[in-house]
Image (cartoon, rainbow, N blue to C red):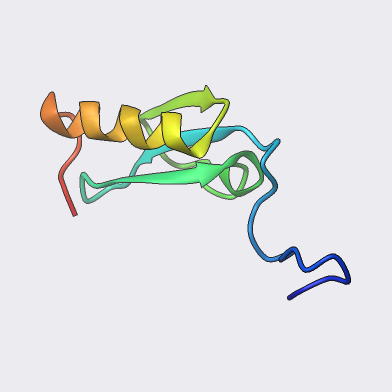
Length: 71
């Protein structure tokens, strides 16, 4: 949804913190702080990270280390 300033409001805000969460199937997803509260049954999670880019870098490292499966 676009606002009067042209920015979208559907995407998480830049000031959100980001987490890498391992799913039961072994894949890791990147979720915002707001989405994290709805995924409480996850045994492994890493973060918070200040930016989405930092969370992506962490997920890449976890895949390389064999802790997460690639998608």
